[in-house]
Image 1 (cartoon, rainbow, N blue to C red):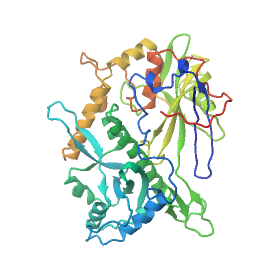
Image 2 (cartoon, rainbow, N blue to C red):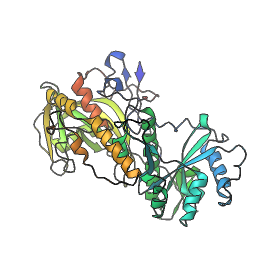
Image 3 (cartoon, rainbow, N blue to C red):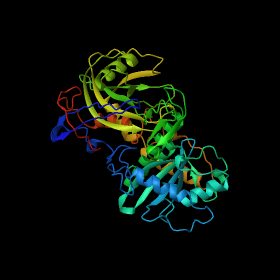
Length: 448
């Protein structure tokens, strides 16, 4: 038996919303083993350095690591050969510029068809201090944000936003580092490589925290400046009469594949910003005072005029690649079963919405060359890191084997929408599985 719970937190207070169900092995369709492309975790989930909360006295904990960090930063930048403080872990820093993580790329084999792999551009604390100092920028403890640690390697990882220093770009570029859009890295990630998926999750977590720091520079209660606390994991108002605590923001979004059970069809929508022929699931933000299943029903009716009855939970995915004003969305995926079939599209929400047969969806999944898109984008990242900029239309990579463009395609395996669609297309969705709204609480979280 497997139990599922879902948790949310907000900056004003900590809230607990739980969605708990009991699954038998026969009906556990939300397991990723049912997906057309198997993953141990969704993209941006499965962060390898987000370990269990460490005790304050542990040298790798945020508080202890922060104290050690301050000692490191007090050392003279000209004498980086000095030994670290006693019992100090190794510090690695990931710079970001305008939401883009520093990255490098390499090819492990000697064959012409070997695909390059990107890596996060970790640099040591002394090197980070040196590079920034060379550009006239001081590295302070408050500019660094704690990301996590690896106990087995005795390493603590930090992120820093260097958006204000443009001179770093050529300085790091000379060493074949490059600041790359997180979405580009997402598409370039080989989803069968657990190490690469882990690095993507780290980058997503870091971007979400840094963008949140940029958005929360002032207190929303009194307007005074905020200051980082707990190694950047929260902020606090500097006003002595206020001292409001501010925590990283998470914006929950429901994303659903609406199913016409009787006619074996699924409802897919198009937004005006989509590339040609791309279709995806409907989605929308949860409103205050609304349950998850209520949000599914409301959004489906608002966007497409379809009434939904039964709502079935699939899985969830952090999504830190939205606009910087919404630094980390949490996509909560569902299957939703239609009670009505006549589509009435809200043109302010969607460009179009249509029912698609299971057979047509299967064909589209079969011909869309997701692996080709991944390899092409990985090559693009490699060229960027080597200083050879080259544009590439990702939509052009989804070609049928005959060379003609696919009639339609869906988001790639990096998106939860892909797995909602492919799970339905490749097997029957059981209706006696995980029904949202069941009153059976649980205290455990689904390990994707």
